[in-house]
Amino acid sequence: MRTGSQQSGDAAERLVADRLRTAGWTILGMNVHVGRAELDIVAIDPAPPARLVIVEVRKRRSREFGLPEETVDAAKRTRIRRGAQGLRERGILADGTPVPALPLRIDLVVVEPPREPGGAVRIRHHVAAL
Image 1 (cartoon, rainbow, N blue to C red):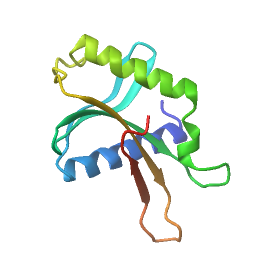
Image 2: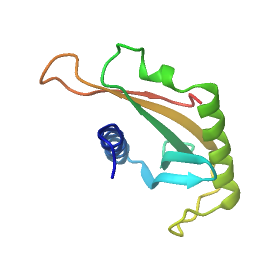
Image 3: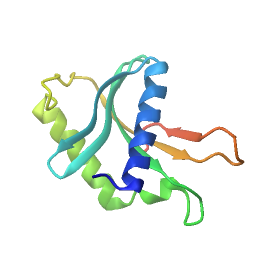
């Protein structure tokens, strides 16, 4: 059973994955476990040159305790980097999808609620942020 917070995070990850697909990205996997790391989204950014991208998604309900970007501490960055490297070394996702030998990049995408009721969800994509 997923908590409300986990369900909200899952929804944010699906929203980000849908946006990336619309932008022409190929989503290879979501919630990929590599050792102690969970990689939110593993994708290919086709923009020349194509890159294998690990996308960390962070969501906040408000800015009361700071920006979503501020929630990625040194320990989290280390886990993500180790997970990304482990995935490259393994060379395959759990479902058998091969991991392409492309240059690697780690992005951060944050999702925040609309500023006013009925407004659009705010999404910021930080390229090569981690």
